[in-house]
Length: 173
Image 1 (cartoon, rainbow, N blue to C red):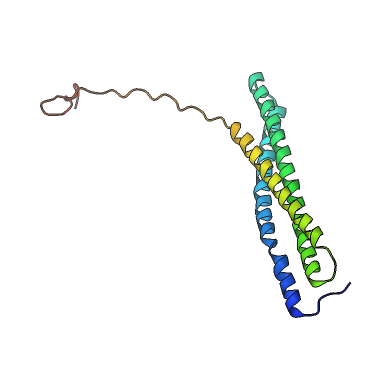
Image 2 (tube, rainbow, N blue to C red):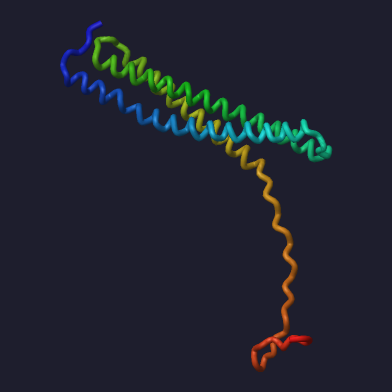
């Protein structure tokens, strides 16, 4: 295996290999966001499980809590799938960077492999985005917005048309 000895080839190899690093930055940010969602799912599931284990929950409420735990399990599955795809994406993009550099600075015919690795990484990223979308749609479907309570009607006092004022209150002043 022969490596390039001139600086221009090595510099070009580095420039070529650095471009996919921007995708790695996006992947790392996405991993952080999705890991935060997983932490929230786990916290909520633990809270519900502890409430159920403590007892004293009426049957109807317990059934709703078990249903929510099922939905949390589904959301957790989607988030774990998303994290796995993002991890595979990062590995493939890292491998792409190595292959691009080696392909540019050596006589190894690996540029086609680098292309397949890069496209596979992008496909993993897109599938991870679909998992993320499905999880967020499921999470927002579970939201239960309480209706605002009905406000009592405000008593309107009649207005005297001559002086455009309400009559004086009767009683003590």
